[in-house]
Every structure is written in C-alpha cells, then in structure tokens.
Image (cartoon, rainbow, N blue to C red; front, top):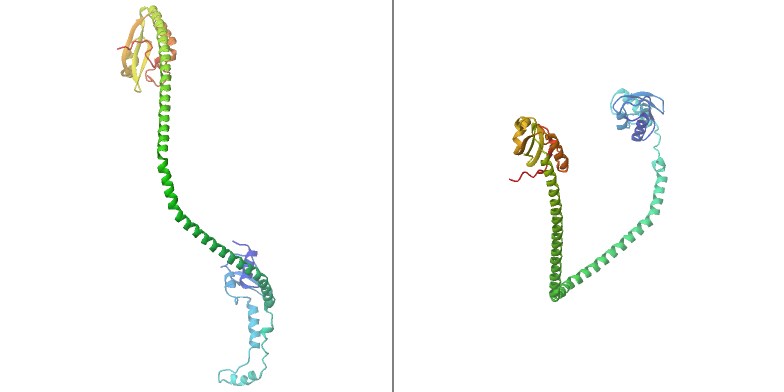
Length: 330
C-alpha cells in the first residue's frame, strides 16, 4: 500500500489542483477518509476514488457557495407559470441589471499565450535541423539507387563471364588430368610403402619381444625346476597333516590352491568343494608345513591376493593364478 504523501500526490494530479487535503492516514482508495478543504477549512468524509472520478465531488461548502454566486450572476428570466408568485416577481427579475460576461479573448488563461509563443520559438529553432535531415536522407537515397544500379551491372558481367570461365577451367582440367593421375598414383604408392614399412617394423618388434620372453621363460622354468627338485628331496612321508594341491574354477577362471589339513578335502571346504576341478597332490607328510612355506615363498609373485576367492571356506592367501608346480599337464 502506498503512503499518505503518495496518495495526496495522485489525488492532486487527477483533480489538477491542491484544494483537497487528507486529514487522516491513507487506508485505501475504496475506504472513506476525512478530508479538509484548503480554501475554506471545511472537513467532510468521502472516498479517494469518488474524488478522483468526478471534479464536482469536492468540498460541499465550496460547492454551495459557488452555486449561490452563479445563481446571483445568472440572467433574470420570467417564471414559466401563472402563479401569483410568478406574476409578482417576473417584472422585478426582468428589470434587474445583469453584470456583463467577461471577454475571454482578453484573458490569458494559465499563461497559454506565453506557452504558445515559447512553442513557436522552439519549432522555429528545430525546423532548420529537420530540413537538413530531410536533405541528408534524400542524398543517401540517391547514393543507394546509384549503388544498386552498379551492382546490377556487376551481376550482368558475372552472368556473362561465368560460362566462359567454366569452359576455360574445363579445358585446363582435361589437359592436366594425366599429370594429376600420375601424382595420385605416386602418393598411393608412397602410402603403401609406408604402411608395409610400419608392418615390418611392428613384426620385428614382436619377434624381439617373443625371443626375450622365451629366454626369460626358459630361465624361469629352469630356476623353478631346481627349486622343485630341492623341495621334493626334502619331503618326508607320514604324519597327521596332509599337503594338498588342486585346481578350482571361479569367476570363469582357473586358480591353483596349496595348503595343509588334518582331514579330507570334502570336510575341509564343505559347500566350496564343488568348485574344485582337479586334485594333483593329497599326501600325508611329517614336514607339510615346511613344504607349504617353501612353496609360498618360492612362488610369492604368482599369488592371486584376491579375498573373494574361496570366501566361504577361507584360505585365499595360498591361491596362485598359474600352475606353479607344473602338475597340470594332462
């Protein structure tokens, strides 16, 4: 909601004067307020909407005074009836003197003549600039028409010369076609030679890598065979603990497990026993723990180290990704 000061400004703007003033806080355009007349000081109640819509809805006291003064200044006319009162006062009304109406042509209403002179002066000052703008607009229009005519000439020249250029280009292309074909053949041959060179280079690298791999593999197998022979020579049959080595499949991949136990594999692994694919070693040894420790230390780089393997039965720390004992040969 707007303030009382803003409501007063709106009321003054709508009525065109400042004779009516709010005498209490503004509550809304449709609610009744107490107003005060700045001319006579009279106070009355009304709504701001009514005061904004009608210029006659002003101070009641001033309206009565204005009507009384107009009635006094009005021309006297006979009463249009045959009553005694009409006959009595009709002659008196006709004989009364009416003040002459003022000559409105000689009155400068709200300084209109001064304002008109000011506007005429401003128009006389602006008129030369308007004429200059009209002249510039006409000049630019002429330049545009001239440019459009030149563009049309260029378009006609291009339309005539384009077929000639096309024929010359066609003749030139036909004469240079053999040389271009030789150039294309040479480029294709160069690309083929380059691709063959890259293929031979990759093949040579593969051969070198395979040779190194075979040498490393042979050395590794020889070294492991020595370890296995030394380990087999240390095995001592008998005892309560059994050394086992088997293959099992999990996650679509083969793994190899080594370990020791006091019972058979079915009792040791329970439901995980179904994962076992092939058993290579299951023998009782007096030094089973020592042999297991030698195997784990010798092939520690081949351990899977995956805690999800044989999770229900345990023993994932002794699982290898490859056949370290080289027993899976059939």
